[in-house]
Length: 329
Ligand code: 13P
Ligand code: SF4
Image (tube, protein in one colour):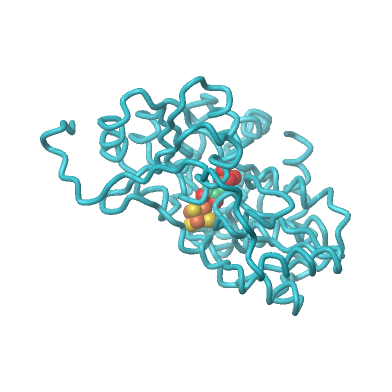
């Protein structure tokens, strides 16, 4: 238990609040808006992207919202400002469209923790297993799965899975464990995790509560169990927005990637958000999400690359479990 006396403050907590004056867009941001219109392109942006990218996006949301937007868009080009598995999901849902990702190296440690070859071996040894895959996985892993879920609909999806089958949940053990507690459904969990979310600890929360005792703590389900247990609310990034909107408090402690604070302050300009600290830093940036920058986005729109290309057989196979998810939620 941390007390005021035992806290060693090597850094101050980071408080996010909307700036009073409206932001002026830069020359490069205006160029992006112009080219986007000329080429009938749409910019889909995850909540963790840097603020200047969020400012020029057509849609900002969580993985579920972005997948839905990707399945409904009329644009000729989809520029995905997020990480590789998200752009792949957009391509799977729109094989005939050009899908671009400003930096092809924007990966995901969670996705990497479940190689398709290992899952394939597991399935060969356990042929009756029903595989529920968190969307943070490669297209090859999706192609081996029965249904996909996101943090926004994981509980709903697992509740709909056949009752007579053993479920293997891949790749996030933390989300899987949280879903098990919510549903009372036993599952086998793949031992993967998000390198960024596991950096939050119970002490991260205690430190914030000392300074902001009235502020509700909202955590992403990718956080470890002791963090989820100490939080007031555990939810996807999209649900964080609705939770903070509906809750009467003015200040919230948010345990997820720092980019989320931009979305929250823009949508809730009268409220303040404390970024959950890790053991040695006041912020918690995902190094992959932060690979996309405004110059890379501008070049990507101008040159129409880097583009997402996929094996057509993998794409066909991966489409089924994604469509099942969209049907079920
Ligand atoms: P959300 O779907 O909740 O936005 O989460 C995506 C993600 O990558 C979390 O690390
Ligand atoms: Fe992957 Fe974690 Fe980054 Fe999300 S925050 S994209 S799960 S590494």
